[in-house]
Length: 181
Image (cartoon, rainbow, N blue to C red; front, side, top):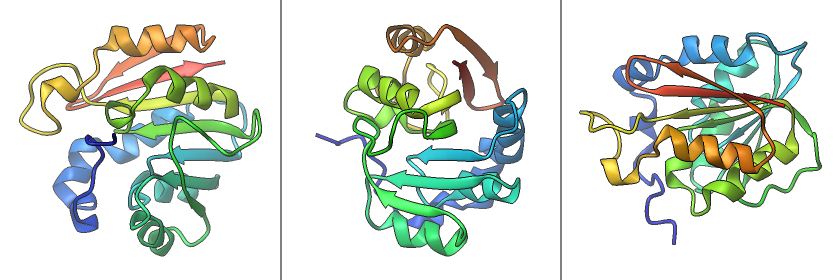
C-alpha cells in the first residue's frame, strides 16, 4: 500500500528546474481563471507547499494536506499563513463544499483509489477541482509509464463522481485537468 508515494528529500521538491518544468505560476493562473471570487483552496498532496505558497500569494486561504508527516513542517515554514494537516486524498476530513477549489498537483498517480480520491475532492469542492498530472507517455521526467494515468481514466473517475465538465490543458511537460461543478 502506498508504494508509489513520493518520499524523497524536500529540497528536490523546490529545485528551480523542477519548478520551471511544472510551470507553477501558469498553473496557478489557469486554476483560478473563471472561478467566481475564490477565497478558499485545499491543496491535496501539498508536499513542501510549493503550489500552496503561490495560491496564498494570490490571496486565497489555503489548507494543505499530505500523507507524509515530514512534509507538514516544511510546508508550514514556506507558507506560514496556511493550515497543513496529515491526511489522504481518499478520505478527506472536511465538510461538504468546504473549499472553493480543490487542487491535486502530481498526486493522483500515487493514490490507492483514483475514483475515491476524485469523489472526495468533488464532495469538498464548491466550484472547481484542478488536477495536475503527468501525461500518459514516456518522458524524461516523472514516474514510469505504468504509474501514469491515461486521461480517459481521469475522465471516467470524474464522471463517476458526478462532475460534468472536464477541460484538459496540455502544458510543456504536464497536463492540467479543470473539472467544474
